[in-house]
Length: 100
Image 1 (tube, rainbow, N blue to C red):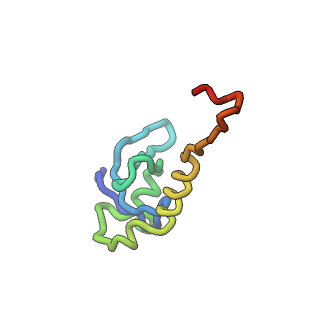
Image 2: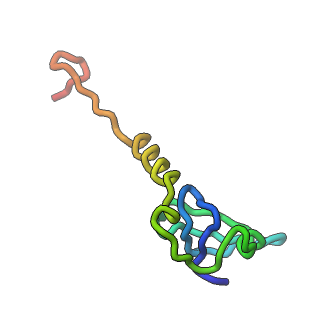
Image 3: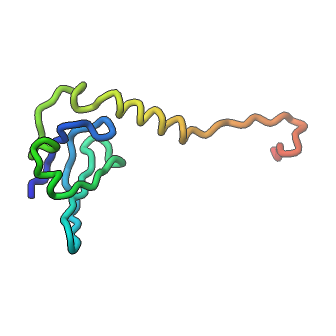
């Protein structure tokens, strides 16, 4: 099985992936792929879907940055950044929670 794959349609806004694991069970074989750009983005794909040329291209296609990293990815990262952002809390000097 090839190691490098390009998704025909962006997945979370990304298209270039690397095969990292083969998952075999009694009824089907699946593959876990991880994005080349962002290791936090991975996808599990059945063998049938992966070899379907309408879904995936074996190897990396030479795509422009706009084609390989779409606005969907940028929006996802912005959303994640905002969700993980710690909001500062300012306490008055006379607050019972001010321990300084």
